[in-house]
Structure formats: C-alpha cells, structure tokens
Image (cartoon, rainbow, N blue to C red; front, side, top):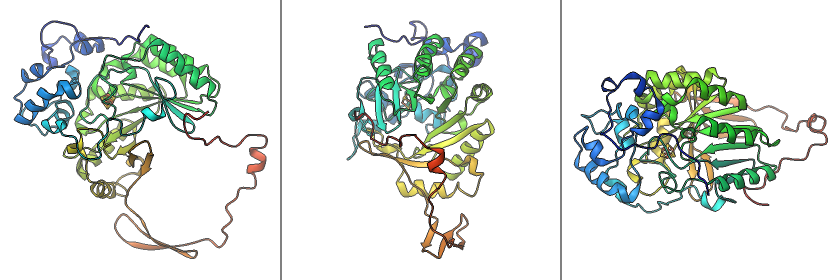
Length: 406
Ligand code: SF4
C-alpha cells in the first residue's frame, strides 16, 4: 500500500541549528530545510540550552510517551534562560507527562468510536474530519491526538480513497475539515489532488484545514501554495497560536499571505495553565491575532488527554479569564470558550453567565462591568417565520442524524 509522502523527512548529519544568524537565509527560509533539520531528540535540545531536572526526566521518558520535535525556526523562539517560556513549554516535555490523572483518556474526544472508515472521524451531523497525514512540524505537549500523530502509520492511499468514497456517498456532509497531523506537510501537488477530489463532490460546500504550520513553519506559506489553495474556495484555515510570542514577523507574513489569497484564517488556541492562562497574555494574543487578520475562533479548555493534567486550568479559572476578555476588548477579538466533552460529547460553550433574572416581562442582565440592567421583553412571543414555507419550498429538512450512521 502506498503512503502519502511527507516532505522534508529529517536528514542524517550535523545537529540542527537554531540561530538564523548561523544559517544562510536561503536555507533558513526554505521550509524543506526547516523540516529536514528539525530538532527531535533530547540530546539535540540539551546541546542548545540547560535543561531543568523536570525537563531532563520528561525527555528521558518521552520515547515511551509522545514524540518530541520542532522546527529550527520555532525552536529559535525558545527562551534558553527561562523554563517558563511559553514556546519552550510547548516543545519540551516535563516529568509531569509520565503521570496519568483520574479521568484522563487516550482518545478524550471519542474520535475512534466515530470512525466509519480509516481516516474519517464523523461525529457531528453535517461535517467530518479527514485525516491525511500523521506527522507535524512540532509535537505539542498538549496534543489531544497524541495517540495518532508522530507515529509511522500515516493514512495509506487506500485509506484515503475509502475516505473520499465515504464522503461522496454521505450526502449530509457539507463541510470537510482536513486534518492530521499537519496537512501542510504534504506536498502542494498532493494537497491539490486531495482538495480537487473533495471539490468534485457536489454536496461538499465548505473545505477547512487545521494546521499549526503558520505558527511553527511559516516559510511553508509561499506563493505556489496560496495560488493552489485559492483554486478550491470556499476554503478556510484554522490555525493554532497559543501565545503572542509566537506572532513573529515571519508568522505574520504567512498569515497575511493566506488572507490576501482570500482564505479566512481563524485561530483555535488552547488554554494552557502557566503558559497563557492570564488575562494579560490572552488579551495580547487575541489583539495581535486580529491585527494580522486572524480571527480568534475558539479558546479550548484543555482536553482530558493522558499526561496533560499539569497543563489544564480549573474550569472556573477559564470562565474568569473569559470575563476579562468580553466587553474589555473588541468583540471581534473574543473567541468562544469551549469544553470538548470527554468521550465524544462534542464542544460545549462555557463562560460567564450574564443573565441574572429572566421572565416574560423582563430580563435582568449583568454587563462586563458588573452593572445590573433590565431589558424589557417584547409583547409578542410567536417567533415562527411565515416566509420559510416559500423560501424553502420543495427542500427536504436538514438531516440531523449523528455522524456515521447509515
Ligand atoms: S500540531 Fe496539532 S496535531 Fe500536531 S502535535 Fe500539535 S496539536 Fe497535535
């Protein structure tokens, strides 16, 4: 069975560099060079900074837990003198990863039980996930799909054909999210082929891609890629910045290139305890995203994946942090705080409660400053839309069946 080749597998040779000044710009700016020179071992990391005891123990255990890896570009953002650096904490495991806390799961989102065919997760009624690759340009310590990524079992061509066939025969799928691993590690030609096959399915209205490449390998976003992606509109990208430190000139250039190609780019951040879990840090992240035209979309409460208890915030802290965003900054910059319910329950919005009282006559709300204000209810309560019968004449109702059923 042929497998989808990932561009730029690590090459044998001297230890990768992490300082752009040590590398000719034509190499540093070449995304294939970045991938070939990824930093993947504890020894390579230890050669570049002084590890803490926690980090040493984490790296020693990582072989049995979850792969380690980052591009030289992303590693160059590490604060070598401070183990609390938000970039460093996403790259280097600590011994805490060896612990399995009560309730932690290998597959916290119940994806494997919603997989009608390899390479497809179909949980919600009208959208599904298509896994095209199992490699990433970084192995994030909070990854909720660590059971699948970084291994040596990428989806095969047969898996992909079966997945495309499933999407083609499941007419209620309107929206396909291409994911992995990181799809932008595939060659542009391979991605073009996959997107073209999806676009040929009449009921697929929206194609989205989840990728951390704008954060960890922005050199990948070149003219050739953008020209190819824009052929497949309506096409959306959701990326994954977690801290304003990641928003470098290179990352900004990459995101702006995508947006200039007409691709709406959203951000799905994960709330990470001690990494971005302050109002100040989140406000800066959301504002800086918006400045480069990336819309803050989700802020995820940490998933209950094994070995990540130390990275999760208490839910009440997450709610308090949200209260420090909404109203205090542009609504455009405020993401939805969601908790992905363990076991496949789906995304549940959580956040501060703004309604204090509600009856047929009045609603009392509390605004972002804590002031109580009464809102009078309307006299009429019938919300049916008479024109629906005209506008939707002859159309079947939406098919709201769950995921992969028949
Ligand atoms: S890039 Fe995404 S899939 Fe890959 S390790 Fe990070 S969170 Fe997981």
